[in-house]
Figure: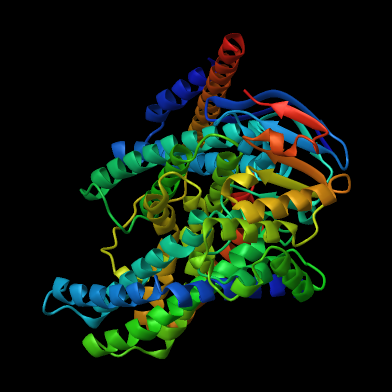
Amino acid sequence: MIRARRLERRFGDKRVIRGLDVDVERGGFLVVTGPNGSGKSTLLALVARLLAPTGGELEVEAGRGEVGYIAHEPLVYRELTALENLELYGRLYRVPERRERIGMLLERYGLWDARHERVEAFSRGMAQRLALCRALLHEPRLLLLDEPFSALDAAGAALLDGELRSAAGERTHVLATHAPERVRALATGDIALA
Amino acid sequence: MTTYLGDVAVLARKDLLLELRSRDTVPALLLFVVSALVVFRFALPADASDLAATGLLWIAVLFTGLLALTRAFVPEREQRTLDGLVLAPCDRSAIWLGKGVSVLVFLVLVEAIALPAFALFFAPVDGPTVAAFALADVGIATVGTLLAAMAAASRARELLLPLLFLPLAIPIVVGGVGASVADDPGRYLAFLGLYDLLFAILAWATFEYVVTE
Amino acid sequence: MLVVAGVALAFFWVPTTPPPEGFRQRIFYIHVPVALTAYACFGWAAWKALRLLWTRGERYDLESYTAVHIGVIFGVLTLVTGSIWARTSWGVWWTWSERQLVLFLILFLFYSAYFMVRYSVDPGPRRANMSAVYALFGVVLIPVSVLAIRLAENLIHPVVFTRDVDENLTASQLATFVVCLLGTLALAVALYLNELTGKRLDRRLRELREAIAA
């Protein structure tokens, strides 16, 4: 699913990722660890194809509508409601049976009651849960998570745990985290960035 | 095709909704353009012709447009939602068109205030002038939206946009002022139309590369 | 080396042909070729920009950038020589009725902003893409600006200065002009290749240095 050889990404003169080899088979679960600034977010952005490599090769066997991405920010519009945000993404990602799917996700992640509230009124945990809904909305084959547990509250974290457990093996995951113990059981591979 | 237009509509609606909720931009633009006109009144000598005033009207609208463009990608930049939009399977040019439509709406709102104000302060505004503004708006929105996306991705941000925009805006000013004051506005309106066509095609084709790598 | 000799030849040959108007006429032989060369540079930059966007080949970025850089140098030269010509012909350092001058003023502003883009975006694929798109806008701007300037002349009612270079060029004058043109183009090509190799070497050096440090 993901294959990288001698992957490199530089910003100006600084090489944030250098000489990295990655192999993730379909349904695999890659855990990426490393201190701040070691390039975890950069690696995820490269796999998402938001950034292009400046050296080496990278192949990702997932098309544009098949990747779910959870970044540090929830990537939602603050002045729109939860429902409006998901409606927007649902249309752009061509989600079939949009209304039902949105409703189902909002319920599952405990946001149904808050669906008509603007995101600016959400707590950080709620916003991150909305981000999860956004990322899962189009049933991606590849899910990229950049330190998802850091912004989640306990309830949200439990929900995410459950989601990852149930989908592991069917969906391919790449998860960057400071606390790998949480997902140690699920991991099929890991990379430690320096 | 319908999905493309659907995407554009969804995105334009999103931007208009954002503006409606936050009311950041449009009120400030309206106030700015009227203030600018008043300042220009004092900057003109007493015996200045209506023609000179028309030129200044165009400058006022142009700079107000520049302000609108500077704000155009702010939500996408601050909340990093541009990443979310770019990852979607829709055509990236739909982002440009959707945003451009919302900028166009703001410009029209600005002119709805500016032109009557100008007629009140200086001299009446005629048909060709209105047509010229309509065409110029399209030009400003198409070119400006792409340049705004470029500036948003840079370090210099608000500083960069005027530098990028003004040289490209010179033909718009020529066409616009020409149509407003000349005896045969047809030529100038046709020129504005040509500008719009050429740069719209170019912007539509190249926007993808401005927001991706 | 050959190129420099060619250019020198062009500049030495000019005085030998009989110019009835003196110095004024000679500036023409430099001013117009320089302007045409600048157009060629911008066109070349746009071509390389198109190649970059088409094929995503990284080398085109440097080629496009260098072409713009050389183009701007020749653009400034056009403004300077044009200004000198205006001074010797009409006694003013600047006039809005001289189309070439106004056009190059606009282009100078435009391509200066190109460098601002290069400067304020971190080096990488993003900057390469944006520069390429901007270079394409530039090349479309050139004919549009020509039209705009032509239209604007009717508006601004400038003082129209008569030109005295409108007579048909004699054979020797034409030959001189062509030689100057070729010489200037050759100079541009030489500068372009020179700068390009220099930049490539710089980058190679930096890469090697990093590889050693790692």
